[in-house]
Length: 180
Ligand code: IMP
Ligand code: MG
Image (cartoon, rainbow, N blue to C red; front, side, top):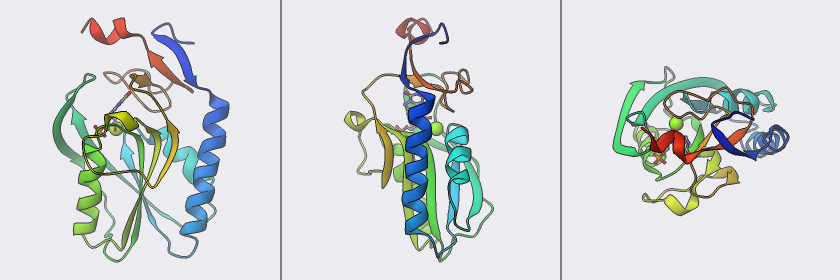
């Protein structure tokens, strides 16, 4: 385990199993509609690539980069669009793939945006859900793991752009983010 982690919260094996289940559920639901699967960069990249490899249906892949964080561990409450998708979502089913839902700010905004653009439906898949932290009226349609209010890294999630490449989800030691 990485020295900056306090403990492994979700092992590679549990990640693999839950991500496979998520893909099965989404694959059944959208078997016939060729959904636009939108990965939210950068946090969802590892989840996204594992997820789509288990989807046995035709899909259109696309990516969006947004950020609500200045770089630390506290949300700034402002969504910045850094990269938009290239696909026209009008009349399409959109599946948003996100690493974690915390306050709900990011996903509430993105769902509204896709609906505004004329998407037929918007389905939200998250790897992690910090249920106790919600401030916006939004819930994932599919969530792989409920977690407590702890700052986690790995499997795509970062702290100041570090730790994304850890193959597991770990709880970051408090001293690592409190000293900044
Ligand atoms: P929300 O907009 O408050 O729901 O926050 C969602 C975003 O916050 C995610 O896409 C992450 O980038 C970030 N985030 C929230 N909690 C954590 C965490 O524990 N570790 C790493 N990133 C987090
Ligand atoms: Mg993110």
